[in-house]
Structure formats: structure tokens, C-alpha cells
Length: 452
Ligand code: NAD
Image 1 (cartoon, rainbow, N blue to C red):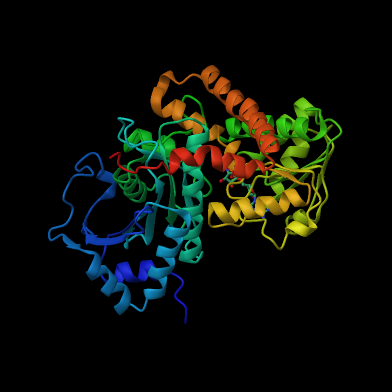
Image 2 (cartoon, helix red, strand yellow; image 1 turned 135 degrees about the vertical axis):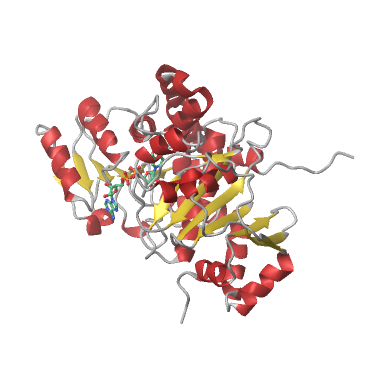
């Protein structure tokens, strides 16, 4: 029978707390390491009080090198899993993954690292930036790994497009729901976050309060809390997506006004709801909305009784025609299979990794298929990046973070930046997705050939 949680099984069987794989995309070298670094008597709530990331937390720590870890995969019948992870790292040109495990909580913390190139010389503790997302334990582990790696790759490009000096990563936490009062589990997550050298912000599966609790008790390497100077990132992200939709409409229809345009929004969460608000208040355009949570749709209708809002079942979103489709829920929703039946002029939303692709090449190929169907689309990391900009503003300036400076940054990148991306792609006769990759990839994958 296929194992659904092979890494968890291997780490628990071999009593490993840490498992790492590093990949050098230039040479193709892969290196595995593993260790036992903490005893089960550790009180994680005491992180930063009685111990730090440098402390020794095991009476008898153990460390294992590449060959031994390969043997562990072999003797656990998980060779295929190891190879699959290695293939994913190669396809996405990722730096690696660190797995941290606390078996007593049944939590696996995965630090999916794509690149540190933009951040390695930034002089901060954090050299990468990316959100922290939770997947329920019922999700198969490989799905969690694939999601984390895809999101990490997108983060490198997002940070490049947002012009911020951090590499890209994404943290995925595979666990049951974690209460914001559970200081043991939260202490463990904060310890793993600090060891991973990135700064983060709460993503799906975690509330904004995570950032507030972390700040108060454990670490400054998180932004976007309710008590933070700029608040949660959903609202600025929605503003960036809104500006990008208007730029796309101007490009497509010669007019940025959306009054006559039907916009379909999938997901009315932290980003989708304020996006709907902006479209209603500023554009008065008809909306079609869909959410698995009926209550948020009712809330929108109650908040805006005059607005033209219709509702569609989540199962038929991709069969519902509209002028503009704004996916604002999960990613991976558009593959070769769906493209022939889509009836939209424009697809611009906030959801990360909208196209079901595992590499830049696959993503560019799918974007081309959309262009062949005359659908205007650009990879979302060009415009769903205002949350990252807000995180950067808060991380660098703390309580001095400035909303005016942030919104000017958003308008430059998500307004003018998007117009430039669409214009230049058209001039070169390529898709906006391909142009965006060409523009940023030189910085993410620089030619490091030593000078002679
Ligand atoms: P969220 O969890 O607050 O909202 C998601 C919404 O989608 C929820 O209301 C949920 O009920 C709904 N949903 C889930 N499955 C659905 C389905 N099958 N059909 C319709 N609705 C469904 O998340 P969010 O923060 O709003 O993020 C939405 C997307 O935007 C995610 O892909 C996220 O990674 C991305 N994103 C978010 C931010 C941010 O700042 N929050 C920034 C950049 C990108």
C-alpha cells in the first residue's frame, strides 16, 4: 500500500527531529542530512526564555550524513519518495527542504527553500521571505511538499518583482489545527521559523493572530498581525490585485473602468472580500461570487444590499462565463484539461500558483495555451505581491512602518509595473508570463561563472 506520510514515518521510526535535503541547481548535486536534536522533555513554550536556536536540546544528539540517510530511505521502503523529492527540486531549481519534526505534537514543519540569492547579502537574520501555511494532517504528505515547493519558487520571483532584498521560500506546517493559545506548539513553530532564517506572514490555515502571539512571546521574524502597524496583508494584497485588474482591462478593452464588466471572484477570504469591496465601491461592476463558506457570501450581500451580486456553486466556477475571472482561493486550478472550456477575457486574481505546473517551463507552456484562447493572463506573482511589500515594510521599519510609503510602492509595482509587463510582452510577441520570467530570472539564476 502506498504510504501517505512517508517522511513522517521515516523520521519517527529513525528517531529523527531534523531531515534536510540540499540541491545545487548548477551542478545537480543533492545532499541529504539528518539529526536527532531535541528530547521530548523540551518545553517549547520556553523558547527564547530558557533556550535559543543555538542551544543543545538533547542529552545525546545524533547526526547522520548523506550515505546513512540514503540507507534509511532504502530500509524504510521509501526510495521512490526520496527520488520524487529530488526530481521536484531539480525541476523547480530549488535550494532544498528542511523538515523539522515534533512527534509528540504530530507536527512536521517544512521549510521549502527556493533561492537565497536576492537575500544572502542583505545583512539581516532573515535571508528569505515567504508565508507560513498549514495543511491538515489528512492531506497526503507529497501534496504538501509539492504545494510548498511551488509556492517557494513563486516567492523568489515575487520578491524579485517587488524589488525586495530577500530570497524565496515557503513554510508548510503539516498538522492538526493549532490554537493561538497553545504556547507549546506555537513555541515549536517559532523555533523552527528562526532556525530557517526567513521572515514570514500568516497564509491559509493560520489566522493573523499568529503574528501577534509570535511577536509577543517568541520572534520578530513574522509580520501581518492584527496588532501590527499595517494589520493583516489581505487588504493591501487586494488593492494590488485591483490595480492589476484595471491595468489588464485598460490593455484589453482600452478602458480601465470596469462598470460594464462582469467579474467572477472565487473565494471571499482575506483577499477576495476586500477585492469585492473595492470592485463594488469604486467600479460598481456586477459580481459573481463563489465560496465554500456560504456565510461570507451572505455577509457581502448584507454589507452591500444595493450591489449586483450573484452567487455560483463552487463546483461550477470554471464553467461560469464572465469578462474577468479573479481566482482568490486555492491554486492549481487550471491545467490543460480546463483551458478549452474557460470563457473569460482576463484571468487576474490573488491565488498563488493558479496554473497546475511544477516548473517555470510548464507554467509558461500553460500560459501560452491561455493566450491561444485569447485569454489575457499573467503569472500572479507579478501582481499579488502587495502582501509581501507590506511584510517588508513592517519587517524593516517595525512600528515606524508607513502606510503611505507602502501604498506608493504598491501603485508603482502593481499599477505601472503591470502595464509595463503587458506592453513589453506584446511588443516582443510573447505572453506576459514569459516576459515576466525573462525579466526576473536573470536575477534569480545569475550566471556565476568565475571570471578568469
Ligand atoms: P483565505 O483562507 O482567507 O480565503 C480563502 C477563501 O476561499 C475562503 O473564504 C474559503 O472559504 C474560500 N474557498 C476555499 N476553497 C474554495 C473553493 N473550492 N471555491 C470557492 N471558495 C473557496 O485566504 P486568502 O488569504 O484570502 O488567500 C487567497 C489566495 O490568495 C491564496 O491562494 C493565497 O495563497 C493567495 N494570497 C494571499 C495573500 C494574502 O495576503 N492573504 C497574498 C498573496 C496571495
